[in-house]
Image (cartoon, rainbow, N blue to C red; front, side):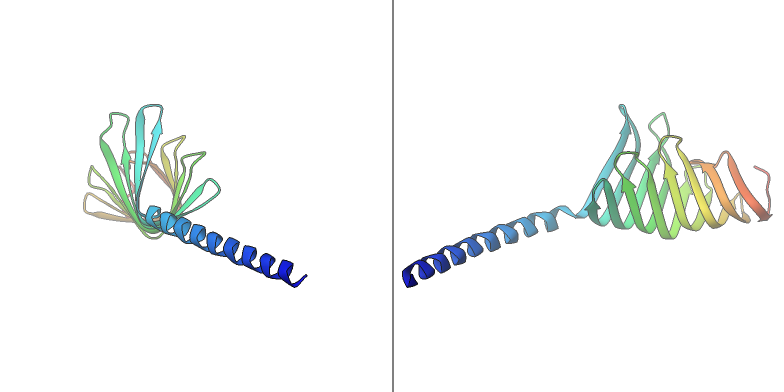
Length: 168
């Protein structure tokens, strides 16, 4: 009986050592894969955007990122705008991107948008900013809320009270 107990203890300790080595190896591989990440979203062969992040973690089909940069492309394949934010998330099934914290988006035609929260809807190639926004366009400052726009700020809709120049 005592011998059986000793054998069971030896087997359990060997199994736990093997498990620790496996977990240690797995942890190292995961840690290497979550820093300095680039995600490219394509619709057929056309590139929609490239998302860069300092650090990223995954939960089901959603990626959560820190220090986010997103480069958006127009149908011709040229850069249409570049976005920077403190945090972001990317949903693999839809291609949608959400960002929050110090959100800045710069259109290649010169316009700038500042906000706290922004959502990019990949199916429509539109952005939605449900909170307060500041837009700098042609030297003018425009303040508002509930923005909906294309990525080049050619068609901008701001809900509610707008302060500043409204014409395009």
